[in-house]
Length: 352
Image (cartoon, rainbow, N blue to C red):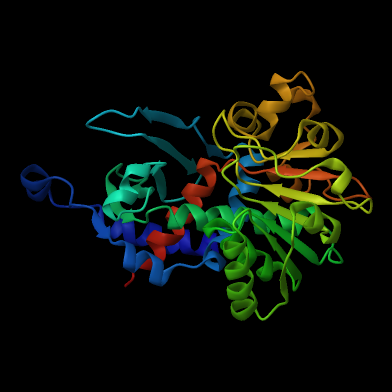
């Protein structure tokens, strides 16, 4: 799908990228299109992203994606600003007609006092033929959450077995909802939910059960959730670890962790990481801002202990689940995913 959409997009771009000399001299590039939040959220779903993100991971493993390290801007609290954080990611997938740069702002908690959410963001999709911006998507982390959910689906598809059909969600916010929707696109499952805010977990379970037509229950503790779950998605603020090794089922558990994206965060304990078949979305990122960072700093692991990057499993270069091992898939979010969802968003919304 991604490839056919890309070919269609190439034709559209080439058609619009050849202004006359006079137009070039007088007006330059046309202004990028602006897609507001309502347009983005009403036209894109996590299902739109899964195939393209899967292809992006395979391309990443083949060295066909240019993904620079993310940029982080810290906004310290003062009388006139902050506190908050700004993350800038991007990437280009070889032989596709666009590339994407994403700006995501998070933790601007003073916004709550004036009735605004603490996070916002935009995707800028750029014409890879001319280098001119095609569109700005005011997605306020919606597209980021979609591509994160899609990566969760890819991890579930390639790092679990079909009979691992009891899935737990630790942390029940927006990302958990996309993880559940994405998991449902892979296979039917029975869901368990836990959050430190029980009301949040109950609302999540109720909403997902109704939306997905699958059974969801609320666990009284993370330990109780782990006792039931074959697969565990963790998507918390990452301020502290959320499970223990002795809580995990001995039959082999896959943990798909997406809460760590800064050097201050860690969801998975070092002893679990050390004993696991550890799979990174991108080692150069997870060693700096993911779960791997904590284990390296503690002297428990090195980059040599990484079993594979997810793209290597997707492309068949490495195997996923082989027995009763613990598998940890560390998702910090890559520019490859941003490029993939950016291309899909442009192809779908530019046709409106």
